[in-house]
Image (tube, rainbow over all chains, first blue to last red; front, side):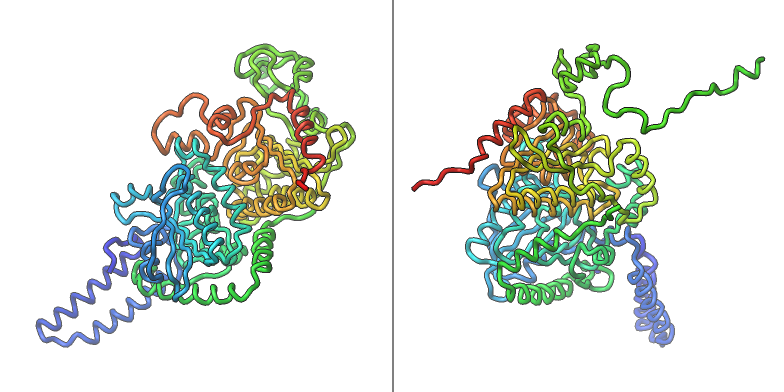
Length: 319
Length: 286
């Protein structure tokens, strides 16, 4: 059971505590309470379905940002073998907010790149809360070019509140780094499989988000900016996050409908953090299927399709 | 009568479309930087730059085209595209209509075929008067089509950028226009066609993080604000004041992200020269 609870889960947790209490009480005293326990268990099951089946966009944001939500490092551990991390952009430095390297996926060498957030304050500071600097984005493209050279398929994992904004990030060309990634990723001559694991916001997310297949975990979110940023820009009130989360259409079902993502990968009930291993199993299964399908397509055709996929996004009329 | 004192005076209303746009009203304008009084006629002659401190006033897209390309050479492309409302934002359509009326434009970018000294190219100009030049579906589509036109005609592309970034009202669809325009630029690159990007005030956010930063040659107007994140957001994030001159064209030059800062009165000549360098194609060794 995760240690950190989300507000909307509280009634459920209270109910589960009661069930546990009754169970131990009946054992201790030898009183048969099985009828009562069963009733409560049924109630808990239906409450679970009710809560997790009707998550509001903002509730999904809180799941996507849950400190215990598995991230790139967890999935690397569960899904890949022999991961060898490779560091640095060969120009300025190494960015701990984006990691990358070579690993085996079902026996096949692949390149893995992803944002890393921390699970506690200390880790978060070390990882800069998953906000990549330009050198992180440049490391990512360097590793993709390496993958292209040696014929390795590429998996990218998005989990970031955005590209870092600060003096150094501007001095080292955050905008140029993102633009260069978007352009280069269009022509990388290997399959690129993108998965949004948790939070995907702004150009920081997109900087490793161009690929042949873009999937999203069920409770991940993907947007132009965080709900806080959206509310602050459009309504001059950064506290209106619930409305913003709904207005932005940032959940996986919304984005599938908008044609921005290709697939929703299911998570264990209540979110990936309730059962990271199970979440990894579901993700792995989907990745395997996707990779097999993409590897059947000749590279030239794959690239043309990648282009067309992004070329076709846009809603306008001739009027 | 005392009552008359409280009566609202009646003003003459002037229809927006009868007011000529982009020409400063009145005979003079004050430079916002050095407070010099600039006479409108002189200001027109200096292409809306301050004769004393060199401040560059923002310029509307059509005016930019007029001062840049050969007279009569401009043929506009994709004039009819208009945004719809992909997120169902309740305020967006009205805001859009109001902006269209005020800026006398259908969208934030004007694209077309043009020439300088007879050398043909495709031009795209973003207009900060329209939703701060932000990129939604239409800007993304028109820029992409302009790039595709350059490829089809085998001519260079020149983009004048002026934008606050991706347009929030179209949400994730705006974000995706960054990938879309960069995808088209990858094709332009493959076709080995020249792309000159000219950064004007302001070039930030999703536009600076996509096609604006990908020019083979990147020029900028003096003093233009150029960067990824707005200064206010950075200050809030890092809780400190930003240094003087942060995120200006000169700052970007110093840090290696643009090729040249070019005064507006020299821009046409510079572009003409660069187009000429590339007109014959490269040479090949035997």
